Length: 625
Image: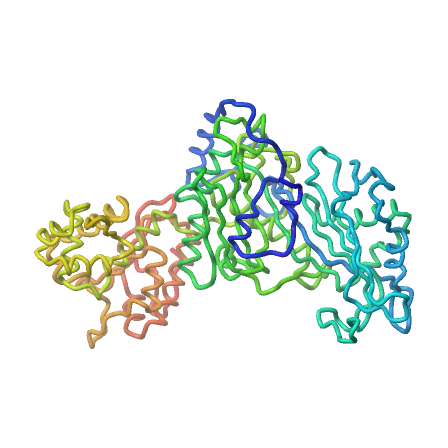
């Protein structure tokens, strides 16, 4: 495979991103077989399952689970910037040309010093304590599309110079394209180039695509290359970076233990499943793609828009983001030790998703806007939050995080806002589905009878037998399959629940009736007004209940609301109740009155089960529990 397989560029769709998911480092196929000792990792993951996470003592060798009430900088594992793309504009602020600010001197310097043999002429040079070189295979020039009036050629040339670290892998690299900046740019035919602002100054534009370079390294690298070409570095001084400079791509990654990744990230019920479930149950846009054919999590990704990330992080987000978990194209065998080949462990990456953002670039440096520093902070913070939501340590535990050639499994103290996991687990989501179908009012008596028979020993029975057990017909069985299509499936003329979890939850719900016939005949009593109009299943309150796994029923004494068995903190409880009040208010006056006077039950973290509670006053205000 050529070394351009990881060339960063404009972002495509999710399928393309997964196809392009490649290792940070290169390497041949497995040549050394070894056994991974994962006992410690298993113990670590077991400890991670506790609901209350405590800060571990100082030792970096131990796991730390960050609490959520810490103020100020906290020690966290330090992700690595993977891909970065920017449009930089350099213009001298103290000179002018033809009545416009700046000059073409920096561009003309590139033209003057560029030679086809530049890679050989310069050889190796030092940057940031490393030896670098020009990649001759990706260094070239061509005739551009910008007219060059007053010059002996029709259009300006454009130049591409690719540089890479001489580290044996060549994946710490940048491709730099140099173009002129001129005001009111036109083509050779005299047409305005609309993509270039009219008020551009004279100067030099540099499009930079890089791998494994921090944004702060980009301009110093360009300046260092210019100096090696015999060009003055003052053209690239901080005061020459124009306000039109911007970034259009950023990705951050870390590498983690394969077993921990499969259990907490890519496996069933892992954080990718949770993110996808949360997004699909909320307003907004998103996408979930996976490839588990060769190995679990070969190329898996979840994209969510910024409104969904806002719900997750409880603060405004500037961009939509994509969480990507992947192995190399040729995934290493499970017996390969990460000590011998770091690529045996997968990468977890967070990147700015253009498809789910309403902006395509951010300013390079603007204290009053969402700029490159803001982008870096948001990606860093979101990635560490994803680790926390996955039940993984936020400290640089060497049993969980794997160093590779570019990512060091180290930590630094940073001011990050870490929030608790607000996403329901996949189990809770499936239980929500069961509750919603159990309470739906549009199923007929015959369809409910089929589901009751399926629950009571009929799971996996053929359609004829199920019709007999439910005292219905084949057509009723198939109608029930259509009605409850995300709970049951029919294959080879046999009906079964999608999985045992859904069947068990449905059995639990049926057990709440003294006689199953009561449910078959009457269903669950619905919220009703004096005119006996049932609550619309698409109403705000019904959606709130389904989203949070809340059970709403009627008794002789009024409405009963069970907030479910998941232990809630005081803050989570208050937020959930307030959201319920808002949803009830949007569902009609009668529903609202019944809801605020209802009896509530819930499980409080650290204080057990609460029943018969009335936490909402007559004005709809939630009382502090």
